[in-house]
Amino acid sequence: MSTVLVIGAGGVSSVCVHKMAMNSGIFSSIHLASRTKSKCDAIAASVKQRCGVDVATYEIDAEEVPAMVNLIKNVQPSLVLNLALPYQDLPIMDACLAAGVNYLDTANYEPKDEAKFEYSWQWAYHDRFKQAGIMALLGSGFDPGVTSVFTMWLKKHKLKTIRTLDILDCNGGDHGQHFATNFNPEINIREVTAPARHWENGEFVETPAMAKKVQFDFEGVGPKNMYMMYHEELESLAKFNPEMERARFWMTFGDAYITHLTVLQNVGMTRIDPIKYKGQEIIPLQFLAAVLPKPETLGETTKGNTNIGCIATGEALDGSGEKTFYIKNICSHEAAYEETGNQAVSYTTGVPAMIGSAMVVQGVWSGDGVFNIEEMDPDPFMDMLNQHGLPWTVEEMDGPVEF
Image (cartoon, rainbow, N blue to C red; front, top):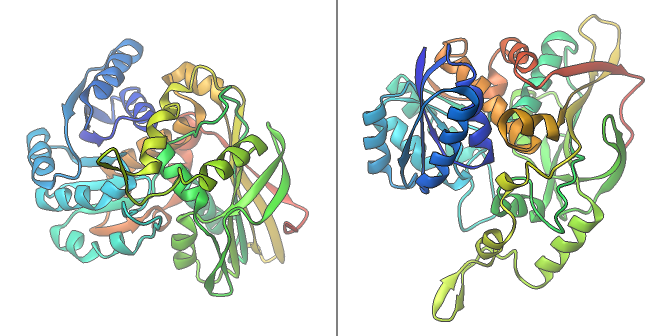
């Protein structure tokens, strides 16, 4: 049994802490910290009501490394789980190094002043974590995370090599709002408005944001328009599967979302550079995020399913030629809300964060240094997905996808 310290108090954190409390045989002591302690207290109250488990709460600025180190030393966890904002990854990793504690996150580092995210900054910590004898596990959410594990499971059990890979992320839920994002608005909009990039013939090819659109019929959702965009697991999957000829990431968006986002871009509300307003500096995107509905408040009104999976084509493991497999999870917004009080987008990230944490604290996954989730044995993680609310299916397709 282990003590864990969770940083961040949004919807993903809420799901993760609830699921940890439901697995008290693994997580004996749960501690939760955020810049806004009242959010931590609200999660703790819900956990107490639903699970009967106490969660200790703290106020912390994750970018203040000395304060983080003091908190870690006070709590003495075996793992620090970073569910804060991506630009806080490096300070939290610095604090874990100073305190000698394992680290885990769900999204790679992104600087505040540039809409760019990549693993290079975190991979650069490998030698320091190795010398300290501690582990940093990167990308234990759904995408990245489950999609990465799905890919490696296919490579372990179905395909000798992967020639092409398409990751399909569909949120078929309806929250009833004119415009809202399903996870942190600032991060969501930065991702969506960034240029698209996909892996092809040994390099990344960049195209304009939202320029390539295709329709796909998602089980449990129906036909949806999906757009090619960049997501960080493409970088790590390309690194650990060098034989891949092409890898792409697709996400669905409704017409109303695209229309609203286009208008907001046109009037400058998605800018991340500071502007002067009444003598004060503000960042338009942060102001927009403050006035949009909070993702953690959407659970009660969101109906429908998510459907996220991977389609991989390659040489069959059994020597029967080239084959294509589709592996996916379908998650109900209503079921996620009934269990944890959060919608499925938070659920599909919070549950894998709990499972990855369980892998580390139980020593199922171990190592000194910085590792991506793709480097670990996929089987125990896949087993826990089935046991803890994210069951998956795999099917053989007639052939490669044509889009």
